Amino acid sequence: MGRIALVFDFDETLAEESTTAFVKSLGIDVDYFWSKMVDSLLPLGWDPVPAYLYKLIDIANDYKITKKLLSDFGKNVVFKAGVESFFDNIKADVKKISPDTEIEFYIISSGIGEIVRNTKISKYFNDIWACEFYFDDNELIKFPRKIVSFTDKTRYIFQISKGMFGKEYEGKPYAVNIKVNKEYYIPIKNMIYIGDGMTDVPCFSLLQRFGGTTIAVYDAQNSKAYGKAQNFKTEKRVNDLHNADYSKNSSLYNFIFESIKKMI
Image 1 (cartoon, rainbow, N blue to C red):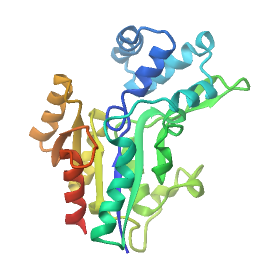
Image 2: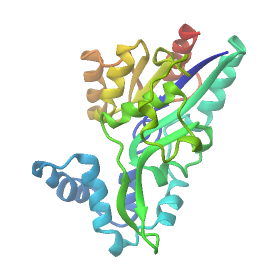
Image 3: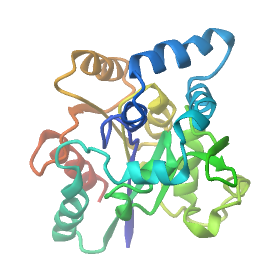
């Protein structure tokens, strides 16, 4: 039996930008949050992901940002076209041509885990890695418990490759460094990584180095997003770029399916 992994970023890849949508749901001006509150920290040496987590913690008391508030918001996240049916569709189509091939799905996100894990599509994923908060006794967000950004994302590519995912590996951060003396669970060449932004570049590079497939997606209604994706293609960071439409027979769906066929 062969295994192939489809690994996704989350925000602006599978769904609309969930952190921005969450901030907006609090009644906060999103442009002010990102440009004045978060981006103002970057010249002071902050990395962008801990910067936004810190600012959410900074306002947690005023806006009552609790575990329940985040998880409830996750249930209403808006997805890109075709996402909700994509996972069943691609598995069914692969099964028709190769009954012994197993398709597995993973998310590696710089977004908020409590939101991502409570979305309608979370049931399809073997594992989801994202930023996590420590919650105080009142379930208010208190401190970043896990930060996933840039090269942090590649750690989880290696965990997938070694089969180190799920409940068994929670709380075992050093396990990924254990040398594998047997066949890899999923070789990196049997992975497809789909992302949209700069935090995905290390994963793009890693997969390309080891023969995997990389795809940049963009919002067709957003010229800036297209330009960013086009740069990834021009700089040869990705194999192809597509509008983030996962509907059956869309260009993205067909490219993913043809990539899987080549791997098989």
